[in-house]
Image: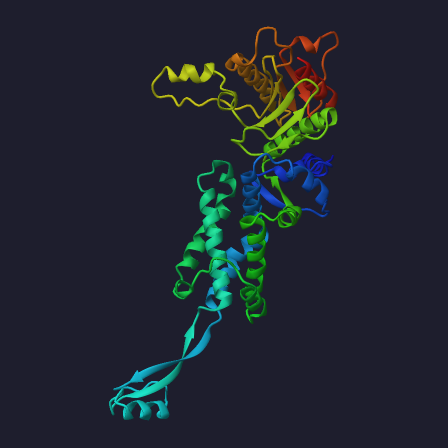
Length: 421
């Protein structure tokens, strides 16, 4: 029997329109891609609705890269212990204790003109300094990553990635406080001399650092398109939990139904919680928007009977519930229409029935979303297995449909009803 995880992941990453490149949640693991299709990456990223999302994606993918993890977990500590130093001559005036080589011609000349007493000597000795071009590049890289990492703190959607990010942050702080690195000046930007010295250094980890620094600067700091494409094309973030992967699989199924019916999306957004919409499609008479992991209360200003009930009592935390996926249809001169989609990766009979009951609760909780006479369905519960409808039962008369994730016809029919009203 085919492993469903492999099938779901294979479907998600094999779509012509590269939806999987938009996945930006922390509860995922880096999965390298064997083939690179820059056209699919370009198609999906050029439609990102906000420039800050492209920057977020760049830093998120950079920090998720196994090479970056390896550098901060192991290589940085070795580099700090074996850092290169430069020596340069310096002049000193020695009195009681002569250190270095005495410059007799300078000493005698200064004594003759009265600048130096007869017990003093001008000496030269070589002093070591860590303020070298390659170390300046290292300091710049560490400071830049630290600044970007601080902007991600508090993002609950990345909680699954925080063990890795915490390790990077802790090692960054230790490195930036290292005794010799505090003596190194942090330049405003990297120079060709810094990179050349790092690549030629005897310690090979300098070259590794220079490569990562260039990649970070071009893709994150400067948002160069080609660099971001290269960064994203190396791999994707595959959800760790099977529930999350099935959720993503269902989402991509819905997005593909919309794309095949209405063409490519007008705009896209990162697949993460708290985003207003992750895709917008232009239907003949409406705009179809796809929302992910958002409450109708925050996304549309809907009322919530559940939240209102809890707010009437002491000792309860009143937070609104969030369906997995929400589709909204916006047409001028018409009330907005909505379709809630709940994904349930289970074939257990008890859990299945509980999921149906939960979805019916959504219909009551968010009843204010739908106007009088709104067409059905209003909600779908999507399961991984095939769902067979009994003969003689008219599904279109029910507000809640039970659907198998691979039942493209049922998904498409629900989308058609939503778009036409």
